[in-house]
Length: 222
Length: 241
Image (cartoon, rainbow over all chains, first blue to last red; front, side, top):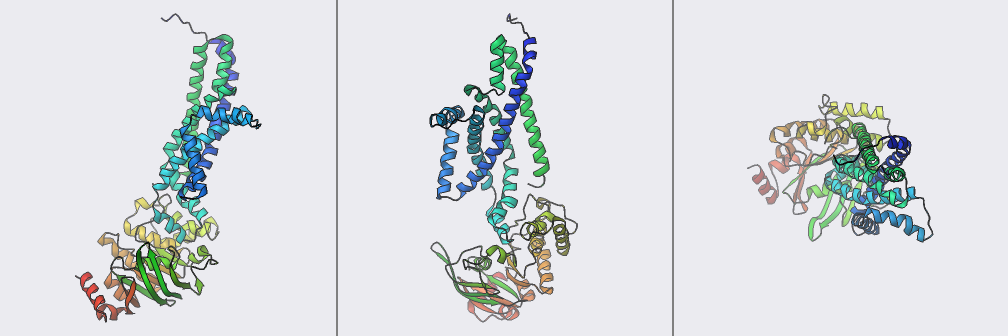
C-alpha cells in the first residue's frame, strides 16, 4: 500500500546482537531501580529531619535529579566526569545516571508514603523498645512500600525506557544495538519494530518480578 | 516503683504540667482522671520518655528516664503502654503484631515468639483471631491486641492512655474487663480514663488532675464518692451528669 516491502531475514540474522542489547537493558533497568530505591530511602529519611545538613543535601539531589533531563545527566556522568579525568565506562555512566535520576523521583514518591503513616505508629513501635532503625525497618518502611508500590512500578517503567538514552554515548543496550544492526542493512522499520516488541517483553518481565516481590513480601493488610 | 518529682512540661507557650509529684508502688493500680488538657496523658507519656520534660525527674525502679546515659529502649521493655488511637501495625497479622518486638528487640527465636504471641492473644480473648489483620478487627479487639502486644514484652508496668475513649460504647466493656483481669494478676498499672465507675472499683488510688497539677489524690472510693476538693466535686458532677 505504501510501497514498502518488509524484509525480515536480515533482522533474524541480527537477533543474537539484539538479545545481547536486551540483556544490558534489563540489567541496567533492574540495577538502577535497586540502587535508586536504596538511595531514595536514605534521601527521604534524611529529608524528614528538616533543617539538617543531610536534609539540605537530599533536597539538592532531588531537585537536580527531577528538574534536569535524564539525557543531560548521562552526558554529565560520561563526558563531564571524563573532563575531570574520571573516566568510567558507558555502562557505568548510564547505570549511575539513571540510578541518580530514579533516586530523585523515588524519594518524592516515598515522601508521600511516609506522610501517610501516622505518628502513633512511631510512638507505638518506640514504646515496645525498638530503636529508630528497627522502627523504620519493621514498622514504617514495610507500610511505606505497600502504599507506594504502584508509583514505584511506574518509575521502574521509566527507568527501563530511559536506558535507551545509553545509545548516545555508544552503549549497546537494546536501542544502541538495534541502531548499530540496522545501519548495516537500513531495514529501519523492521529492526525498530522488533526492538519495540522486545522492550514490551522486558517491561512484562519486570512487572512479573515485581508481582512476585509483592506476593512474597508485601501481602497482608492495608 | 515509679517516682515523679516536680515534673514540669511546656509545649511552646503552653505550660501543660506545672509541678507534679507522684509515687506509684509495685502492684498498685492508679487511675488518673480530669478534664482534657489537664496534663494527665502528657504525664503518662513522660514516664516512658515519649515526651521530653523541662524540669523535674522521673525514676522507674530508680533509673532516671531523662538521664542521657539511660538506655531508653531497654527501659521501655519493662513499661508497656496502650494508646487511645488504635495503632496495631496494619501490615502485620495479629500474631505477627505481638511477636514482632520479642523477636527484633529481645532476639528470641521466631517460633518461640509465635508461641508467646499466641499465648498472650488467647489471654486477652483473641485466640480465634491470630491470623486476622487489624483491619478485620473491631476497635475493642484492636485495643486488646495492643494490650497483648505490650504484655508480650513482659513489662513490669502498664500504662493506659484513654484506651476506651475512641471506642463505640458497646465495645468499652471488653477492654475494661481485660484491664480488670490484669489487676487481678497483680500488674502495676497507671490508667488515664474517663470511665469514673471503672476507676472507682478497679483502682487502688485515684488522682484528679486540674490545670497541670494533681488537685486531689487518695483512695479511689474516697476521691470519687466523697471528694475533699471543690474542683474534684465539680468535675465529677459534670461527668456523672
